Length: 125
Image (cartoon, rainbow, N blue to C red; front, side):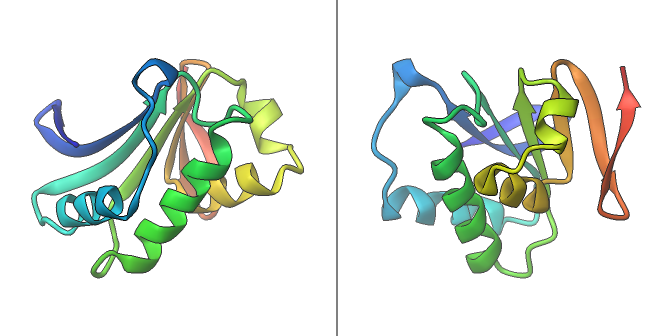
């Protein structure tokens, strides 16, 4: 889980089919332990694609649980996807819509968007 990128300590959650294992309560407790550390700046969700049909429900469940159970949660949540922003932002999929509520930074098709006033704004293209 702990991962260092640009001197920033992150909790990295990878959704990768080859390395797949059943997510359980002890995994959640491990994530929460790291997220509650003051030195951790961000949660990053990446892998094959966290918004694919076989991943999005689990990603949504994890984010919902972390937001609800973490101590005074104020960390950035970054999600990396291969889908273009236009498809993600205008979907009526309930899981994706809920995921977008939880995350602060979205890397969609290699473009970086940051949530400002509850709206994703392109910051890097």
